[in-house]
Amino acid sequence: MPHHKRELSVADARKEVHEASNSKSPPRAQEKRASTLINFFSSFLGSRNPLAHPADPRKHTVWLLDNTAYQPVNEETGETQLRWHAEVVACIFEREGRRDVGNLVAAIADYIGLDGDVGGDDEPRRRIAERVQPFLNQVSPARTVTLQVPISRPAQSHKLGPSDRNGIVSQTVDMGQVGVYDGEVLRPRLQHFGDEPVSMSTTFSAPEGWLIVSDIDDTIKHTLTLEPTGIIRTTFADVPNAIAGMPELYRYIHAEFSPAWFYLSASPYNLYPFLHDFLDEHYCPGTLVLRDYSWMDITGLIKSFTEKTQEYKVDRMEKIRRWFPRRKVLCIGDSTQKDPEAYAEMYSRYPEWIHAIIIRKVTDVANMEEKNEPERFEKAFKYVPSHIWRVFADPKELYDFVDGVGMEDQAL
Image (cartoon, rainbow, N blue to C red; front, side, top):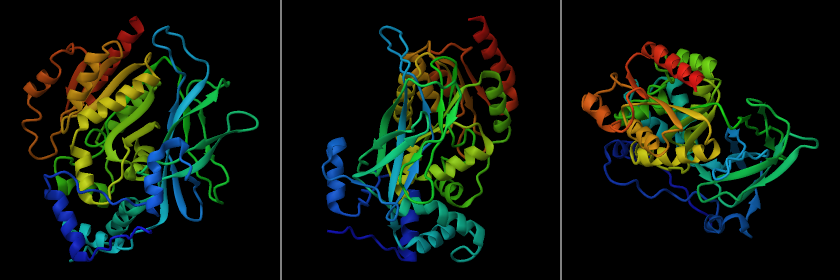
């Protein structure tokens, strides 16, 4: 039985956006955007799903998310495997999405106060339409794809999937013992998937060295995460703006430490193209880690930015640590949400892993007084040595701190 897509009038779309910005209740159940109910329910069967089918380039869109390859370390013996592994994430959508995108664009434009009743400025409306579309496309459960990795001759082929109920494949690929160097980048691509290549970047990172875990929203990009209207405006309508001084700081850190970069955000994966383009323009290449579920309504988007962010970030950092237990980690975040508490929790678990924590004190968002109180940071970092963490307002304050971290590293 086909799944019927919900059509919104302009009035309904405006109501949805307004309710999202004021909602304090749990997100409404997301629509199960499978092409058939069979596909959705069969997605719970996992890798042995007998009903899984290959994705079809005529019917499906596939994203491959950039990743970082690692050599597993046996924590009991300390031995490093010579084989390279990488978690490959693919997002699979139906090509036909909801047809009411125009009404939702009009409602968002109207809600955030663009000129005209439904927003008369063409460029912001174009950006809204482009960024909202991944939220409207149906996800495609129970689909498989084949990844071609140009790491040997002939190139390796790895079957990925089937996709889960959110249309996501998350699978560890064993690329074997191959001759690559730390920092080398390859471009795996989908095999036999239409005329337009679907590819990703895989960066190979050795077991030892530095690793940066960086938040995105209000740490390196203006998002206004405490203001629902601000989230909607900066996510859908505005040209994304980097926090002043942060691109230069990140380039300095990269030159000093040659680290592996992980950008850890509470944003849903629907925003991957938008955030990937932003990072590509302003910051160092790295792996972008996003929440692995998709929302059909704006309420879910607001909740994604604000609910259980500490638990989510700790969980993802635990995974990163399993990949790179010997790397030295510098954590960078901000004061709007739970970055201080999340990083402090990880330090309490693995003090030998976390070597420095940097928190941006956000002063350009309303109602930040309590979150910026010194007592908040002192409580969060109660069990973290004072030389490990630093709170800053201007990135220029950090260069001496970063140099100090580097000098401590040289002394080890």
